[in-house]
Image 1 (cartoon, rainbow, N blue to C red):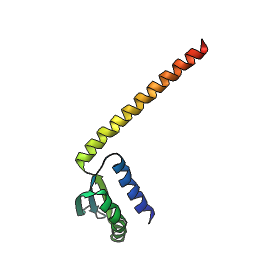
Image 2: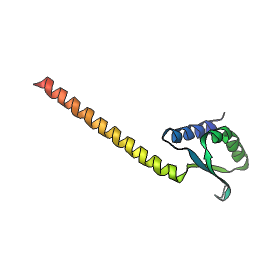
Image 3: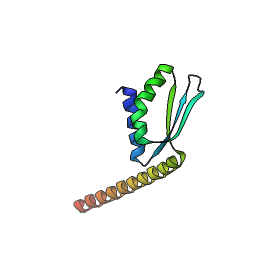
Image 4: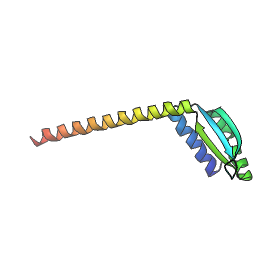
Length: 107
């Protein structure tokens, strides 16, 4: 498998890891004209066909654009924000606890 195919599969996996289930695939020509649109593709079949899609696109000098479905994207944004807030809250709590421990040691 080529580098671009590995990168594309890693991107699909990254989106899936935060909840994306379906993807829109757009293929454009060198002038950004739409050649093909494949809506609402699920991850596993797309993972299977992605290397061939990229190989054909390279031969035709086309671009391949993969986006999570818009409803998935909104949910992903919300989940990412929640995860970030959770991480920030845990970090603040850990910092406060560490500060309290240091204060206790200094007394």
